[in-house]
Image (cartoon, rainbow, N blue to C red; front, side, top):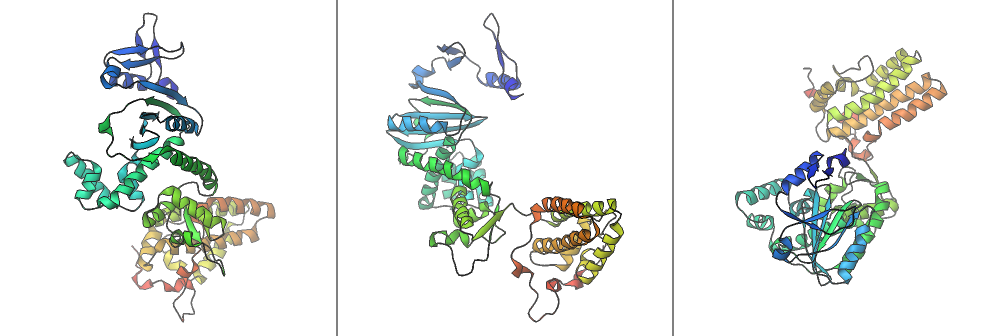
Length: 441
């Protein structure tokens, strides 16, 4: 469908007909007179008539990108040859430009939202989301650049802003090296107005760093697939992380994601990912996908496991025994009765998420998601334990595997200290709940 959307037909009279919607849209935006550039028989390249002589820009290099790291060779050629010009890369609507002069990168532009200056500042913790939105509104109200707006609003000083502008250019540069699809076009001149500020970033070290990042990120992604993964500290007796990793390690609390740690430390995704990966290899942290947030989401995931356990026991004619065992466990656990008030269990063993949310809000103050996750882990854990005593060995093994898969998004809370009972209390950890506020709807 994508290929068809870009399809254009040229008839025997030389008339051009867009076949796909994308082709029609592109050609409409290019209305005017064009001059054919001489090409091989399987290519058609056109240039707007008169633009080459008016701008002094000629196309020096062009090609298609089909393999990762293909742009490394092109960038190396431009840098080593000390060419001056603009390298434009187009990939499914993403358009990036890198400006070169005498072996250096002197600027970059991008229409990719995550690579804009404001997003770089937000990801590095230099701006809050509210400040970013305010600055964007200011640029629309008055015609001015984003950097000027955040300085006028006093969100950043010039001394703070300049290094972040450099980092943005670097991020765009590293992004083009990682492209595995699209096209590239190198023109031997550029419009000076396109460059907000001239930098002097030598191509060779940038290229070396970019290649190293690509190599390392392949290993990182095996353990940390994206910036939403959450690193959690492990108990390592008698050892502490290297000094250079302590800043990131201090932020690994089992709740903050890679992206959130970046905002608190002023580091971008790759930098945080690299340090978390090193901490993982040394055994100081583990990393897993983020836990769901909110009572509804948490209960929904546990409900899938409960439904699977009850359905399996029902098929074996043992569901009544399972229900009896769970009822005794909930009553002895002291806190489950108020937590499950008017919430179930229902006929299939599941709970009403809305009612659990109401009950939880009444009896738990700080960090209710952590409390609920821990409590439901214990409840489902007992359900699985009870099922093991009721089912044949081969059925029990299959059930255990499927339940474990269903509960991956809600892994147990490692920080057991959050569940501790008050000093001197003889009750279980659940005794910290305040039941006085619990009222049925």
